[in-house]
Length: 200
Image 1 (cartoon, rainbow, N blue to C red):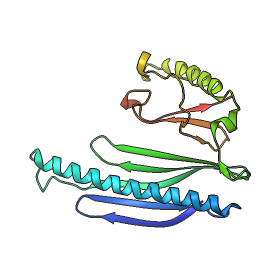
Image 2 (image 1 turned 90 degrees about the horizontal axis):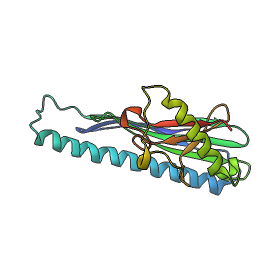
Image 3 (image 1 turned 60 degrees about the horizontal axis):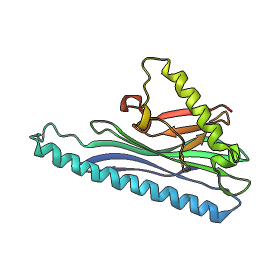
């Protein structure tokens, strides 16, 4: 995984720093092309979304009495981070950060089995009982985290019940699976994005 291109998008509404990754060297060139197309599509969507939100923010700012002197363009960054790579697996993410009033973040995760030349799933990694294994570990770790009074998770109907079939995850540098939840998904916003390592 390497940086294909880096560039800036600047106008009256935004200042976006963009770093575009590219996957190279896979034996399956069809898979390689599919991954790179998916990455480029995600980067394009992120840039378009940032600019749309920046325009909406500008309109709202001036509609509520904001001044030219006080207006500042939205600062944003779109890039990638390699989480794990060896002869067997490749795991990385594309991220999007924005400096809106309540900082906006978004992560898209990519996990591939390089030997099988395909996307790797949680079932591949944990077997047919992956839901049972992961949900038990999730519940155990959430209970441990709740022992810290600063940590809070949603309860009852809004609380964690089970991971989704398309649950976001990545493989960390120690080869462990990390289950990822968006801000507000299983906990209040101040907890941010939640990541829980599955230690089984």
